[in-house]
Length: 403
Image 1 (cartoon, helix red, strand yellow):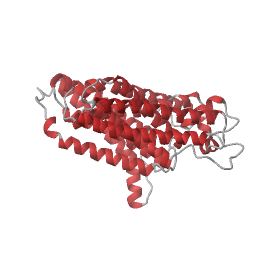
Image 2 (cartoon, rainbow, N blue to C red; image 1 turned 180 degrees about the vertical axis):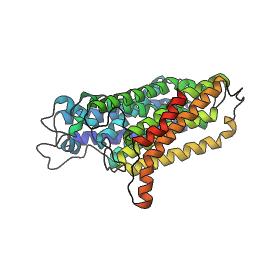
Image 3 (cartoon, rainbow, N blue to C red; image 1 turned 60 degrees about the horizontal axis):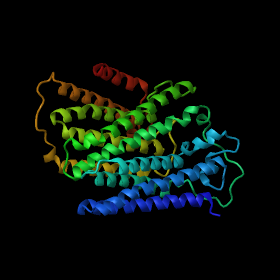
Image 4 (tube, rainbow, N blue to C red; image 1 turned 90 degrees about the vertical axis):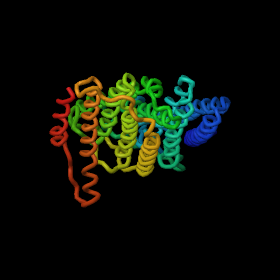
């Protein structure tokens, strides 16, 4: 009988192989416009979802049955834990959370493969989604495989962090954030496909609007749920303490909020094409940067996952996606020039642009305050802190201008 750890690992390897197949066949099909290849790539996207679902179900079975031969279960579960705690232990630690992230990515990709409008953008959207998906699946296999089998399993485990066992919000808050973070991959994929196909008009925004709103809504709900959870758990600083992990979820939310407002200008006046592409690239890049900060162990936070092996992979991925997307934008810049200009400083378009500037100023302030201690420590080897007084002093005037 195959062990659960072996079954889970096999499902991950199969998902990675199918992702590679989907990317290669998708690119060839998009270039040659071969309908059969494109259909095969779409079906492969659904198959990746099924493989990752097998991995998720396998891990949940291992957790619920307390199979301590699986390393993740032995390290983070406990016989005495209630059933609901065992279930949510899937995302209570680094390896499980990365597995969940990859699975949610496959959900978005599979739905796109089935319902996205059949036009020149769709093949490249799926290629970009599969590329991001392949990175997370490969990182799980290489650096954070939760299915490693123990030859001498313990009779019991320590259970998850006690702070994660005392409130039902553990079942809701992390999942909402992941749905929001991963949801930002979809408009990013549409933006990249628009650049690849030299179609930087409004079509990519029209097709990605609902996806953008969905990701933004999940991220908003996750931030609100996290604030409420922090309020009821003693010692977590109230609704909002400007904790680094809180900040890294706030930054992509600000960029996504700016994007949602800014796309209205492009749809009405055919303006801000390059600006909107930059905003969605920024929103997605900030979500990956935040993931790196939380899972690399370089920041100190009660919410962080601690030191983990995935940090270097996430940093390289952040740099690659940022450099490649910015380079592609520069390459297509002649096609991104606006056909019209702002009528006046008091026009509706000017107000949207002003709102964008304020939201990005807020995002930059939060980013600077979050990473400044890291920069100082790296240069001087001295530890400094940037706390709520700084963030409040800078953000309050910006919020007053926004509202």
